[in-house]
Length: 137
Ligand SMILES: [Zn+2]
Ligand SMILES: [Zn+2]
Figure (cartoon, rainbow, N blue to C red):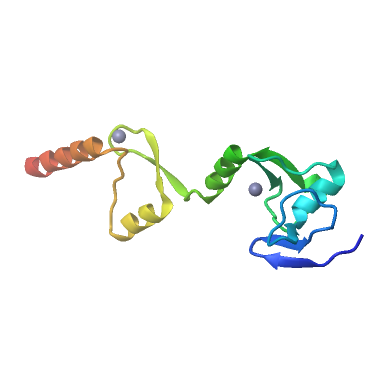
């Protein structure tokens, strides 16, 4: 079966076949992945569920790349993806491993920061220790 695919944002859109039972975008279009799912399963994606692209390539509409998951877990899946990069550091005071947004860490290094702390109270303790040491000198 041949059909024309139109790009629409991250997804591919196509003209819906006459007999397509699902909702149509602007009354005549559907996403290609919806079409592929329907052709292969004879079902349309139920409400509350979405068709997800397993390899994250939203143009890769091969049936084996598609799966149906609940809207809730889908949102979770993609928000994890978008989450900011973290750098792992060891707290100068308590030696606990903690994480910090990488771009914040880079900025702090740029600002000449030498010590990193998991929390404010560890930071205060290191500062007090350094103060005591400099007084002792
Ligand atoms: Zn997805
Ligand atoms: Zn600490």
